Image 1 (spheres, rainbow, N blue to C red):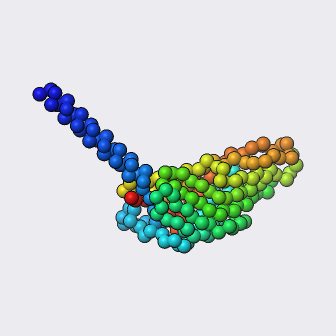
Image 2 (spheres, rainbow, N blue to C red):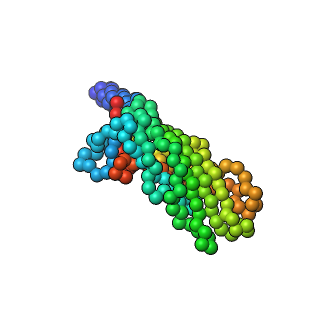
Image 3 (cartoon, rainbow, N blue to C red):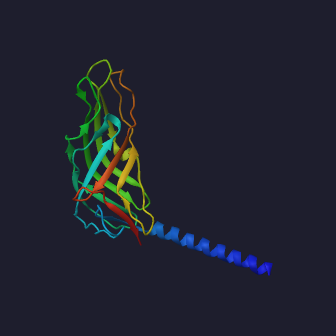
Length: 212
């Protein structure tokens, strides 16, 4: 009797392991689908965004407390691919960003250009963007310190939804400044965190699902 009991436990364990392996394989092959955001009665069933659908990109960073005033306009280039989804953003300079940090009446300033954002069903992110941030403080010259960042080189991720669930197209990452300063009073390097949110035409974060 004990032999049959052990055999039964082994069979149950094998079935559970097989189910987990099948689920992992299914997730690995799943497509990432972008959908409209906002409040809807059913999770994961919002309308799928078609190619050329308008998409916005909102951006904020801890350095200078800077954030875009309105989403950067763009459009969907590809959606529902097995490994990644690419958003093509129009090259667009943002001068309307607002920075909360200031020194002696001088507000920090953000200049941002976004060309393309790619999201992978495996959680990988590629951001083709460039930003410059000027910060002011007790740096001696009174002119401030300017930093440049290539976000393609930044470490960025987004939360991939579980199968049957929905998530949001919100990217978080850490950017590293490039180049050197002539003003030695400026901190040599800055590594601010940032958040990039892909939004629908109504300004809501896009909903993400895995399918396949």
